[in-house]
Image 1 (cartoon, rainbow, N blue to C red):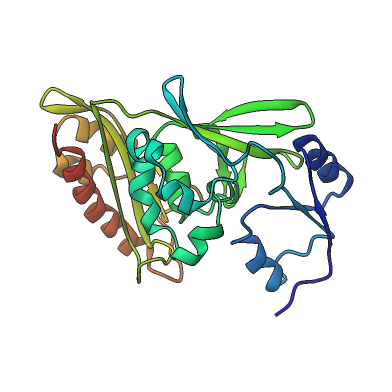
Image 2 (cartoon, rainbow, N blue to C red; image 1 turned 135 degrees about the horizontal axis):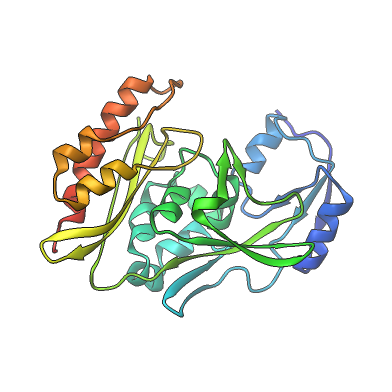
Length: 278
């Protein structure tokens, strides 16, 4: 299929892009386009204007500063895969990157686009939640920062307003005590996960503390499993699995019951990763 007709404008600044969003209520932003182009071609989206933000400067940087890793919205997946700063200071994101789609998509797709699209089966939104990160948005009233726990609102729904542009996101930099875990189950590598789990914790002697388990593919947003987090911090993996209070819905990939079973399988795998080299 082919997209419906649309106009095209390449914005030179954030303020110009925000103004264009205000003038054209159905306009869409174009960054990597790996989700947008598909929806255009299937006519699931039919904007009258595409606003290309790829020409806006300083949105494609990766920086380690002030105890955090800041990733610009236009950073490509392949750039993140090759980044020493991410490998060293945001290892959970580094571990998740090879699971995202396929090399051709990672060459063009952007990390900010994934966070903004907020697909509930995608890896990066869950990583952002597991790491207790935050998002920067630029809108008509300037810049604001949104915590990950407040950012995801529903199916493909976020706290971004109609004229907001996600400009960057930040996660706390890993320390010597940081432990991370990541696993997902998909029908074939590169497909969206049937169920996935991104996790972060801090080593505490022979145990763990500050455990954060973010499941994806099990609800309309990535979700924390707080009861399992508490059990895992107490060192009891069996209790953590038993405490899983997820209620996945059926979809074309699996029933809710199968998804919950797989979530328990992944929790055991990720728990072993968190407990490595404590």
